[in-house]
Length: 208
Image (cartoon, rainbow, N blue to C red; front, top):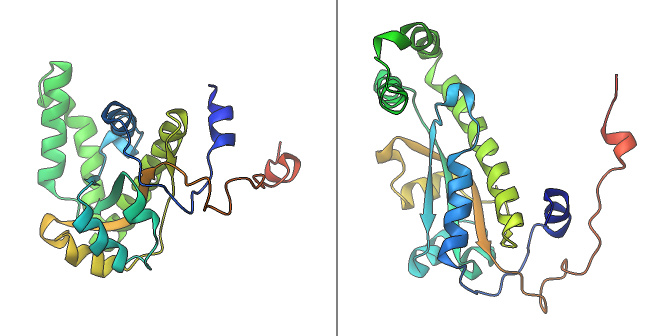
């Protein structure tokens, strides 16, 4: 299936049927997320993969009782680093040196460039980090569609309550967006047979 066919097939599923996603398909989606682009390649976020039904019930309560959360096979919680620290940068460059078999010292010019980000406020860096999670989210949506797995990106939840529930503050994280993964309930999802509506390409794209 081509990527355009997959994206035409997908929609923001409103009702899922509770069917379990095969482990191999979930891993393909997670592996795609791991390859998502980010500024400097830093990936300043973590993604929680939640399959525990009791915990999903608690999350549903702080997410406007959206049924996809508990009817999904898994819920991905994208959470940005609340602060960018020197330790984060050091860890990243140690990883580069390990993977590429080079010295950390040889990477100093790039490292010093990235360290200028530390001069920004924590609030500004949180905004920067949060934006990166949406790039990863986009990759997840495409990967899920290619695997014929349904998904629903969600911002409709109480971020503070979710952060407390999942103890994200203690992990230095702040939740940004949710992504339930599962399979559409073809009998009860009112959107399932409706044609997808998008703006005409002539109005969407401005060619210069």
